[in-house]
Image 1 (cartoon, rainbow, N blue to C red):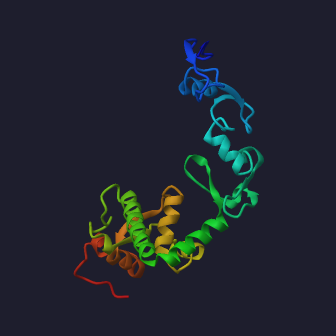
Image 2: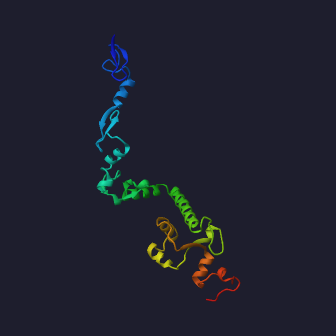
Image 3: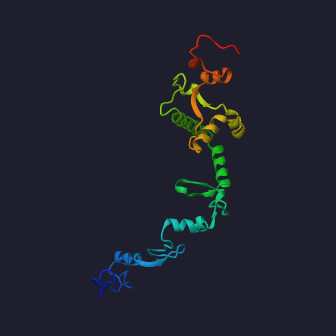
Length: 229
């Protein structure tokens, strides 16, 4: 039996020859762990000193991610895809929240998404329908001032409503976005461009009347007297 002083807490402890800590300089495993945890180390990425424990080589998850993905992409402009293991420019990655890049490149993300859609067609279809309904309600709510309704007759049924071009320049959007799936494409375009001016919500009746007769019966007060084309 030997009496020694712990190098961490400073307490005197009894050291037995057959103890598991016979080669240690600490009174317990707790003091041993705390002493190792307070050992200063050098981060492999940022080269800053930090208090590490075990086999930790990086001061933070951010440094670990930067090192794993090929360094700081904000400085070099290059990033390593975690799926195909290829170093590519930052423009080949999708942007995530807080102005961060995705861990996978665009090609790998598209391939993974297509594979998931192929394996889960029911869930993919439900997700698309829910997303379109939510996006349509969000766009219509913005251009209606909070309450979704027709700007001319006050119709509130969302299935009867559509987006109208105030200046009559709908052909420009059709050329730019294409005729196929124009509804969802137009909603995405409006949301991504911070809801530009020149659009409003009308029902299909008022929108078609403006397209064919250049005016709506609700604004003329001639709802019972149709205009002859």
